[in-house]
Image (cartoon, rainbow, N blue to C red):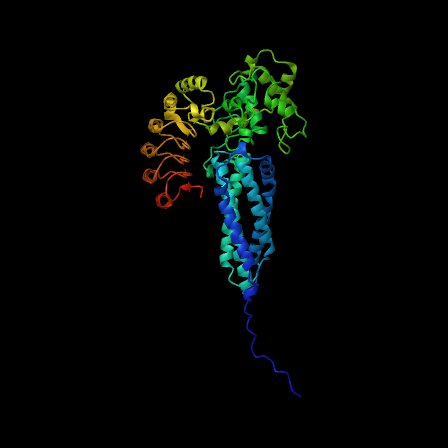
Length: 522
């Protein structure tokens, strides 16, 4: 009886079917990458005032959606680590493709929502928010690219080393973008606020004062309750705990900042936030008093509400004139409800501001304050200090526009040595005004969009060694002038929309300034 013939060797592995390879996924993935990269250039600069409510509505889903891709990619990372270290010698372990597909899709959705949130307002000119935007876009693009590489690795049974290198590199991008997002929401010191002294020393941060002593171990001066400054020691810490997450330099919802007294007085898009002498007429109290289910109630849903005794103290301060320097003893007779509210404050209440104060500069000189006050009286909202205790000055022509000419701008020249940011967009200044900025060596940001300046201004600009951001949108600069900007190695952002600068010049300038983001709108 014939015996069946047995194979003497294993059958060769089947050759992957070309038709079953992930061509469709690759095409759609590359199209998604192209759309993500083009999105910020097609949308242009953010302008919350022109954005429809639907943009704001969809954008506000970003904080909810962003946790999904972070969770999915963290799970994939655990699976990949398990596949690497738990496999047997010579064994090939593969993680499934679907989690990566789902993670990439959720990442794209979260990034689009974040892009709408950024353009919906409140983040214009915020460098941290802009960096977070580009970090999120980089994460989404890399996620789609990792998905494509993984699909081809699976279908062709190729070595997984390149895919895994790409995947874990993308996890680094995710961490970087997530950290920036957390800094916008909670502050840049959110992770280190309660860090023990050994860790703070390792990170180069100042150590915390010991109880009862200063940093050097000397006894601190004991301040009686009557000597406490009402704003600095009582009200500002309340704002720091309850309001500043959304109303600070990194994030100013409604263009309102509450992290400094000057910004609090200035107000936001709705006008003044407080009415000294009248708590009832102050917008922040009106908002706090609205029913919790009202859309306009502040703080918004999900944020910690001020305690009743904290509201009592804020109203007391506002009714008393909202003075930034008055002490408790100078406020006159203290009503019984206020005394009860003061008694409910924790003993270390004013310590909330220690880390905030430590980050600020020594403070403006009396001469600078005098100059600033004189100009603010003549030109309200045109100039301000960067922060309450800072000597840096910021100028904006938003409230002046076509009324600002060379003669008026010259009046601000006494402040130029402290000028760090200037927005002259849409004004009728000429090269003569820019020439005066040669006395502004600290200038970092300058917006000259839609002004009449020419190449003559470039000769002044190249002398500003600390310049980081320059907007020349809609100006008459040419190839010859723009090429001179190569002398500014610290330049990080350059905007050249609607200028006569040629693509060839842009390419040449990019080669000379590899770390500069040159935006042309095309």
